[in-house]
Image: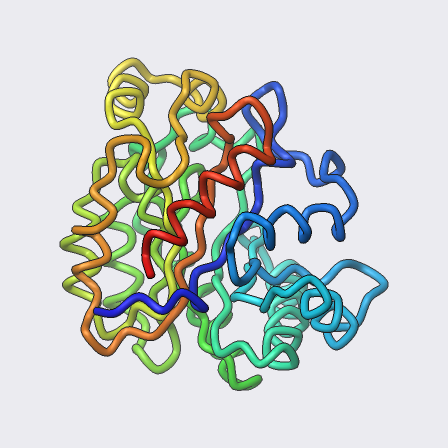
Length: 295
């Protein structure tokens, strides 16, 4: 598989990491400042997130002014409990996937949401409080999200995520096996799946024809393993130094990417949920160094 440099992007979470191991978008500096740093780091594209009060076209022009292209964005929300909350999530899915289409993007990541009170935030990466009934509902929600994005000409890339009701390898396989491939693609996060101890390379190989895009992450496996064994919370694990810039921790990223099919032409979106450097800017620069090495 040949990596296209113009298909390597970043979701710059470094700027919104909080002191308590969470994220807060209000911490982000003005968007033009972030885009300038990303461009100077040598990264070609950025996770698309159209700000409130801006059209997709205006956002696309702003990226272009900074020498950047848009990359697939993200839809998430609480697991719906009734028709009203399902409608709210599907309306959000429709709005964001429409924005992706207007930006010329063929894919959007879809996930269920997480919050600080969630059972799997208190006990992450082990599939806490799993029930067959809930997993069936999760699968149906992802199917509905996929149908919604497909109507806009955009593929929904199912994104398992720590702290949510779609977290483990078993849950990932259940959802992908139960929803047709033309409704739901796969958008794995190699860090979040790896945190659970999943066979990430095996998952990518088994569902290679469905991988539309992925999140590239690196993490310290010994921290993840200790956190799972000792029952650490999401935030405690993060603050223990879980995350690192790509190429600086335990993940064999080249072997993971080698599991993608030769025909793969999707996006690689770098994420560092909490930068391991002194400043967010330095973390982004290290991400750019990794991106440039892929040429």
